[in-house]
Length: 349
Length: 268
Image 1 (tube, each protein chain N blue to C red):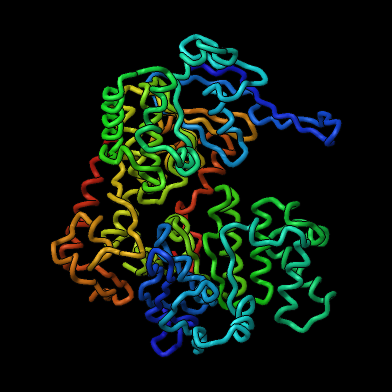
Image 2: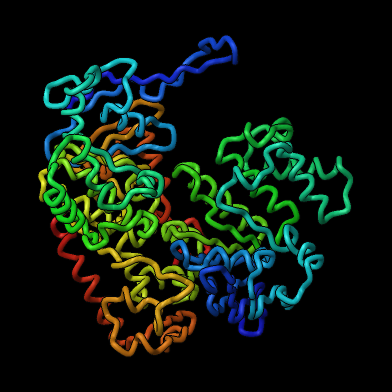
């Protein structure tokens, strides 16, 4: 954890992003607050429509052109990025803060050589000659584990496999040694063995370059492996955030319980039935009143449809914050019960 | 079902005017296995390993280059006409993408009823409608939504429509090709539970094709691991996940995220 005196690298405060559409205003991000410390890895977990990608893209001002209404603060190294104009933002994008996207085949231009695209990324922020930028590009391709980088620098994207394209995109994102790398579903489009290689690469680079990483994914397995802290998003809000071990072992929010219990696991006992979360994720145009999760929550009380829960720290662990209207003791009792209910299945197998 | 020495090669051609054969992609390259009555067999593997092509060959949606697929002792790979149609009643499939596998211009009622129309069953409108609402109810859809269109349903509900359609003719063997990989995490469990319930109640034999080793472990009695068109390992669930013997199986299992921590500095 950071010292209380030290400023976090990134602090997002009460961020709201709304998109006006024909059907109504989509509240994609509905008041979220989080921090990423220097050199730390934050995992943002959520389903489609939870607002996780919009939240990540807004950090770099990538939702502006879509007519979004954005309020709140995105403070990076003491500067509120929401207050910057496009030109100033462009100096930060790809330089201090970089982003990699889910689908590496659409993020690279198909008609330009991979190397040329990385050279461009280098020269966008550094006053170096083409030859120097090219040397740096070859070095970067080597760094991300592309064999024979001196030759592959001349390849077009279609000559790369999916995993190699993702590596090339990471190389481009790292061109200027960013302090923060935002990775949106970086491995979702990849096969599991390639995914493992890319995650190992990200982890190695994070260690070597000392950069902070914000990894956005639907896959709890990925954040369990990579993140220092996890934030769980639901319907545009953060419903729970804690250190990774805490969140996985002592989750407090019924939605987090649902996520953890609905996924079959490789390392747990085999169970007869999974415990799905009933219903579907809500509409962001007309989200449920009160606690957004109440229509799908097995423990909702009548007044939970009225009262909006705040994201509050637990008394015992201030870094563990939960937005739930149930009493802390009640939640602990319920989670213990849920755990116990699974135990007999373990005895069977 | 018995699958023996199954091969499917797709020709690669060069040239536009005078296309000539320039080799072949061996999508399925000599695969043999049995599907036992009432079991759930999993086929896992990565992109391009041939698992979906195998499924299509088992369904007789493709003709193999070589080998046989025997369903209840009858080789279905060369069947045509009415005999093929009869076999198709027994073999049904649930597809990966519930968005592209349902006709957007048809109501849910007519999508689920289509197998009846094709096979000339329940000609009486009232009877057919009754059958369809029964199926919709069975898969957890509100039968009152009979006249709605696919776009009015969420991904999970659409997959339920796909399951209802597949179950309409009371098949013996159901092949589910990545049935949950297009769905949100919280919805996947609903569909997996549904498949299992239907299997138990109707005595179905289920073949589950998936890239997700956790899903396959949860669902299947036996598991086949495919790599480059071949089955590299086929074993009982506990044996495969407990003591994998093929190096590729080991590599696959080790690659699943969440089974280890990469972060060294917090190994508290």
